[in-house]
Image (cartoon, rainbow, N blue to C red; front, side):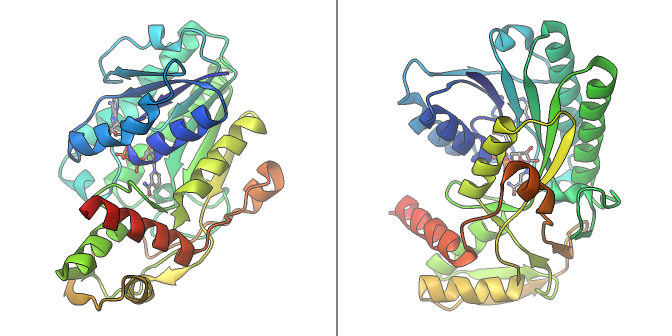
Length: 312
Ligand SMILES: NC(=O)c1ccc[n+]([C@@H]2O[C@H](COP(=O)([O-])OP(=O)(O)OC[C@H]3O[C@@H](n4cnc5c(N)ncnc54)[C@H](O)[C@@H]3O)[C@@H](O)[C@H]2O)c1
């Protein structure tokens, strides 16, 4: 099969491409290197993909402005992961979130409609569409509390409108905080691990009681692949992780894995931060056979080891 993956140079996109190539598929990777974090990190993410010569083609392309029709030539399934992620910057750089998360999604869907004949468009969404308590099933109320969540919800609505109006076969995956090797440098686990390794202080924003069941990257990739294998048009699935902890408990686990004490300081809670994000994955289990497999401790060990290698 030929897949198009948008956001291919990003954290999750690069892992997904690797898995698709590992299954013998052809992958067209697209990324605009939006400077939310440094381009060299994204270029490094792409390195392993280029070793699958012949099966992987990469196009540097901005979904907001460039021609997309030609990229869809012969493509059967699109994974749309390109977006401005991260909630804090969405308060200060709203235009970029609007254009990369909403306009880019609309342009891609319009192109899919024009080209026609695709088997499936899989859209990567987020637990942030639920708001500060993301704990229920997929039919829970959608009350995003950050501009990031609002733009991702708008993108979901576009996906559903294109499905209803033009019969484009779609699936929406709501990812719950993803971690593991190559995690974005702005994400909490990455910041904490690097700071503890260097003996630098870490800042806990709020009282540290916010709770997560974060998802290890291989689980997110497996769930995303299952969504293509078991396709029900219009379905929405939560994809989440195995073990729930508070932020304070997470830091204790990291201290134990790394073997060093964290130097903790406190700062104000981030506006728009979720209090609890723990996926109910019953629907994904029933329809896709998805359940998270990697425990938090095992996943964090992998990420710490990757961070150590990067430092060395
Ligand atoms: N990482 C998480 O914990 C998490 C959680 C929930 C949902 N998600 C979603 O998963 C997807 C991937 O997230 P990630 O953490 O890998 O982020 P990432 O920033 O590492 O990857 C996203 C990539 O999209 C590219 N991109 C953005 N706008 C683009 C545009 N206009 N044209 C072309 N490329 C563009 C960026 O350059 C980047 O490389 C996003 O849709 C995000 O909303 C991520």
